[in-house]
Amino acid sequence: MTYCTSVLIWTFVFGLYFGLSKCHFSVPLKIFPGKYNISTGVNLTALRLVALKSDGNGLSLASDPTGTVNFLDMVNNLQGDSGRGYYIEMSVGTPGQKLNILVDTGSSNFAVAAAPHPFITLYFNTELSSSYQSAGRPVAVRYTQGNWKGELGIDRVSIPKGPNGTITMNIAAILSSDGFFLPGINWQGILGLAYPMLARPDSSVEPFFNSVVKQLGIPDVFSLQMCGAGLAASSAADPPAGSLIMGGAEPTLYRGSVWYTPIVEEWYYQVEVLKLEVGDQNLNLDCREYNMDKAIVDSGTTLLRLPVNVFNAVVDAITRSSLIQDFSSGFWDGTKLACWMKGETPWKFFPKLSIYLRATNTSQSFRVTILPQLYIQPITDVDGTLDCFRFGVSSSASGLVIGATVMEGFYVVFDRAQKRLGFALSSCAVNGGVALSEIAGPFSAADVAADCSTGPLKEPLLWVISYTLMGVCGLVLIILLVLLLLPCRRGDRSGEITDESSLVRHRIK
Image: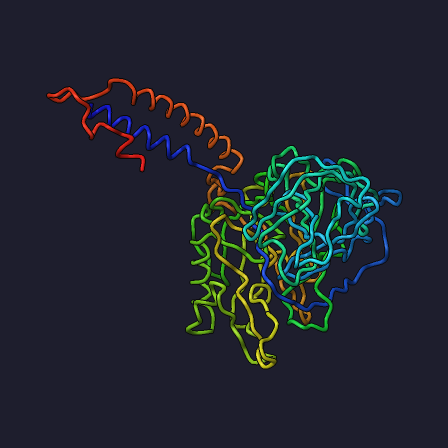
């Protein structure tokens, strides 16, 4: 009986453990309040109409005066700032209702406010759209910061400064939210540009860009320039802007060559980080540390987010190399600002940060580097005499996220057709004639593992395993109950069941 009781106890414990296992969905959207000043003028060359097509040798530019893609029409179609996100104007429904929609490469739902909210001035009124059709399916998404709930529907959408044409697509009508819409924002929805695997409630909900490619026939490529490159705050200046180019890449928005890294997994835009350097110091961590859980490129995340061990190593390296002594720990963890007298800039005190990405030739890598102007970020002055700054890097429990802190230095090409991401120097990442970002390579990748992205199982697979184990657990519990009713006992001299043999009495409380 003692043996039987032991078996039952351990069976129940393991069954309970696996039965309660649950995978939590989180999209790394992290938006901080802030205001940045930047001149958004782009020095465009002579007007030309170009389209980007895919051939056997890669992406190539071609003249297409009769096509649906006019890249120059899309230049500067983004507004917003690096602290509160970049958004594009879209027309939703019939007749069209114009809304500003946050551009987010870290999620896959196109969702718009469909009910009043104290922090927004506009919302999509489904009753005023003759083309809106409710799908009758509830949907909810939880982000790193904030969440919303609503219902799925279908409607017509066009983009004034986007590809020509109207698209019929899935829309999530946001009916309630918590911590998603924030004070001071000027957008009323989110444009998830990632893959179907991240769509909610399941991957059958076709994401926005998939619909655009299918219905308008444009190449399965988009590119993103975010022009909020850490300039001093000023309420009198226009907010930073940028460009979302759908169908290819616009050459006037970048300088030099585009360096490509493979997309490791098509859910988020997952890449493979090989190493990090602070100044000329290699952190010398196992490359799997950088890809712990995942490493992704996400325009909806404000900061550069690093796994805890990597973050601590970066802070230690910056502290060792910085000319500032006894720096407050609150600055590194984001709870305090660092302030200097107005007109003084702290960037000379800090080193460059470099990220090495595996190249499409997997035996090589290339390096993207940001200057301190991108990660020591100005915040609106406090009392008119001080200029204050925040640390544009944070620790993460959900993987490495290359967010706006890094992306603002580069023109990023999301070449979904060839399963790769491209980085080039952004034409707007310049301050006082000084480029705020660098790219170099190729370098040998022989000093790192052949596969640095090996890590925990992906969320959808974890769901399958979780539900399978829950089913097994249910079967185990049924067997457990049957065993409890069987005469599996240790007979004492009286032949009665002792208190110690009652599993339920002692284990379920």
